[in-house]
Image 1 (cartoon, helix red, strand yellow):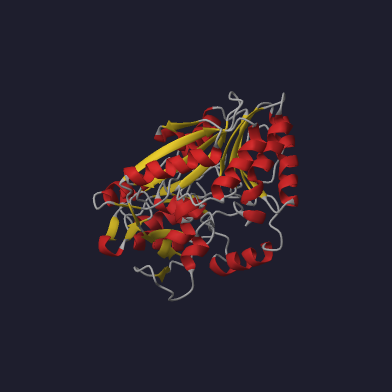
Image 2 (spheres, rainbow, N blue to C red):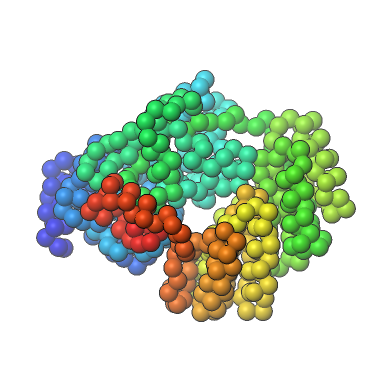
Length: 425
């Protein structure tokens, strides 16, 4: 073990209980990069202290929550220490009358939702693997799911945050009420920053009531993607009050499946369902089971099981072009690759490709170029190890100098997740 890491372990032992520190195992590797030490602080101050000590020793720190998305982003340039939020798992305050909650970063999404449900409330998100994904992790990766169509993304739901900075400062921004404009909007800046600016230790969210009833309906688009795009636009231009809308493109099925979610009373949903059937007529409509909303997670699970020959890419376009873009990818992959996708009405798609790694790399590189020409983007969330080198994030446009300036201000020694974000930040 290098002298700097040995010295850090000695310093950490002076301020943290012994059970909070352990050597890293092979299973703790991040994209093939092996850390040396795992630290699980018991409170925010301990985490901030551990981060400061690592920063002073010029060691690289990888924040970790539930570990469900550690493969996202570039492989880290260095990984000396994993700083875990696993023990920061408490709900600090549920102000149910104000529809807000303050929660520690290591609390799982499922545990939070279960507690909120006791008061008929929810955090209106549906991220991947909620049983294991933590609040800090979903914020760092900006993973909110299909409910963002109605309730907004995580940046719209977070109203306050506390973050540990590399110098050991615990900085807070925002507040406990929805109408709060005090100070710099640090929570929105941290959301989606992949833990490169600081380690989120707690967050405050606005909440929504649990629906009295939810029902899902699925429409089969008989004219494949062109028809599905027309139906999607018609639904979006209608007066329907739906909470989620997605299109499933499954290789084994010749017809795109359009799923729509209605929340409310039985009478209200019945009226909405009748209007939906009228809009998509004569396309057939069936009532579907809630698991259809796990379609995106199923794609990611397949990629994890078949890591050698699978790739997952998240792509975004203007909402009016998202299915046209998916059609371009679908036609490119024919006969060469297996292809499935879940496309959200917000203009975000998730594609699973399976086949020869070199072909996957070629197809997705070409698809990225097509997307960037229309103002879209593509990010790799998983790629086969044997695939030719691929840039994870794609073009950052003219925003890279600003992002580098922010990184320099928050983390001048490049301590946190070095190299993992856009442009090698």
